[in-house]
Image 1 (cartoon, rainbow, N blue to C red):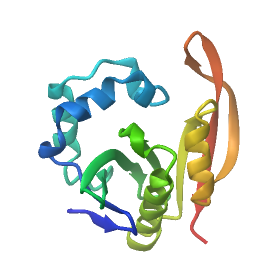
Image 2 (image 1 turned 180 degrees about the vertical axis):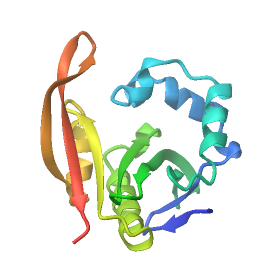
Image 3 (image 1 turned 60 degrees about the horizontal axis):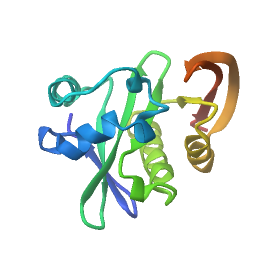
Image 4 (image 1 turned 90 degrees about the vertical axis):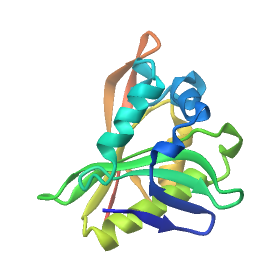
Length: 175
């Protein structure tokens, strides 16, 4: 199942082995970039990232996308939809923008809107959702701008840098 989506400034396409550059590995090990991702707990190597890419290539239940900025055709981050629950028709969205010079410019919001439209119109999902650390104000704002609402706050749900943080559950329903 090949995926290719397009918006005004972005393409979303399946992550490929050719995307696995030194820059990509650096994103995954940079605490400024991955600090609110569950992947920050473990070091990343070219090998384990390559394994992850292979495992998710053409994955019907967890499509994995490279976020490509049209200006310069630059790989600026990744987005995963899933796991998709086909019975109840919902999926999680996980996203990060690895290129720090692209932060705060609306790329995450644009990518979230694009994948949400795909989830609703092409896949027939009823709901998309995401869990976000309470300190991750950038992601909370990006999801809010994409039409998501905070549906619940799980108090003291994640342990981060020696303290307990709330986890925001954000969602959007296909109406």
